[in-house]
Image 1 (cartoon, one colour):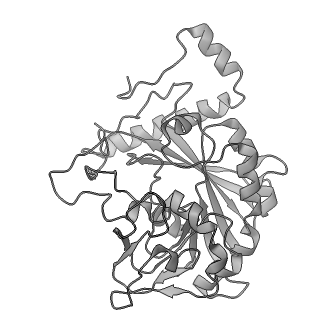
Image 2 (image 1 turned 90 degrees about the horizontal axis):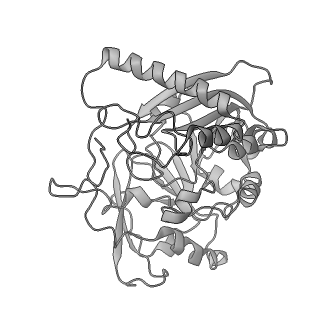
Image 3 (image 1 turned 45 degrees about the vertical axis):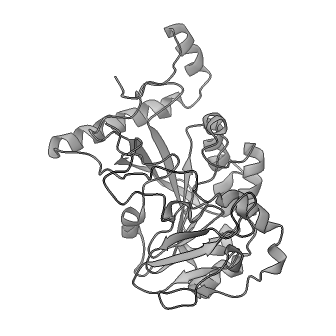
Length: 360
């Protein structure tokens, strides 16, 4: 019995009707077997909690609405050039207003965290003088803008490399259309799969990816989403890359149990990450791996830096698109790119509410 029951078909007959309409049932069955094997292997050699608590701040009302702010700034985008890089450090001049960095590559080349503090003066329905602070990790870079508002040349300026040495790893976490997200308004998403596909096809992945680079994209468990990436004329074919690995992120509680029943029809305790390479020919065998991690806040994925590094050359360059937080050593791009780096998001003392960040 899972700790978080989901609404499921009420009879075996109803369940069968749903499963018959799902052409990916065989893939799900194979995935469940891999998950059970992986959980069994971990339990055989590990005792203890499967996650570390991360306490959320009590009051989220003052969390900066970066998405609305980015939509407003996009209207004034022409006023801010794409050609200048904003380099920040603990001794650099302070950034006064969010418009100083909108659609402008920002880079922290130091080995220390830097706290950025500025007003969101252009944001509607906010105190224009209120300041917000965001932590920027060492050797990280970011671009705060709507996806598609920035030319590839501006992103390449961040790594200052020639055409043969671009990003070795590009990670995407697109806002796939999802009914439960639409109801909860957890994060902004595209209204239709068709419109999001157009946005993704407009991304200059071929220009941004190095000759032996890897593209990874998070999927929902929708068969339509999977087909939009893998089918003929799909995203991978358009980007000139070939699938070679599939990673299964299993969402578990602090005690190592799947967050919902593995046999569920409507909700499943896993998400897929597809990895594709630029230099592979079709027909290579597919490797499937399992990642086990407790979820934190809604839509935040596990940090992949330590997992992807063995696949990368030394001093590799990584880009995350649709990012909601910064990663040390990486470049991040999105209209919510600083969301989880906001100083007020995570509690710093024992008195804060732990709002299901470490589910039991």
